Amino acid sequence: MRPPRADNQEAVTDADVVLLCLRAADAPEVLKGLTFRPRQRVIGVMPSLSVAELRDMVGPVAEISRAIPAVSVAERAGLTPVYPAGSAAEATFAELGSTVPLGTEAQLEAASAASATVAAHFAYLTTIVEWLAGRGVDAGQARRLVGAVFTGAAADLATASAFDELAGQHATPGGQNEQLLAGLRRAGVYEAVGQGLDDLLG
Image (cartoon, rainbow, N blue to C red; front, side, top):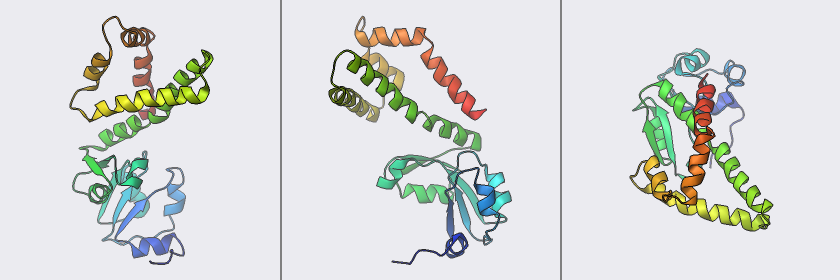
């Protein structure tokens, strides 16, 4: 096993492919003191710095690509959006699950925004758990019940059906699923999700 590198410059010097895993706000300060080799390939995993901006920071290198990995890559699972196709980003993250090469950076930014819905999803589940607890269900039991419902429903994601078709399959005419869905639509919940995603992209 190779010993840890003494500093960022040593890590960059020793690598043929360099992953930039920084907060976007910290990148200019961290990168300005580093020297990259012309034949290196650089992968940025920061959602808001473009290929052109990264090139200005690292100087002339063979290739700059981008990826938006999820935590599931730690388990060699998940699907990572990358740009462009055929890049070091695609080759690297194909080894850590699978990839979706996107045609433009605008599409990559949209995919990044879409991935920012995870916290909102868990907040939605928390709302359901708290509602159950407010009806007298033990909080631990409520979490187990809600977790079981959505774990079971998640299995449907492996099918070829579109998500709106899955919604229809779970919404029995006149049933509780259909009634709640209709109520949330009347309240503008889903329009608010779309607007929130638009806001993330500015």
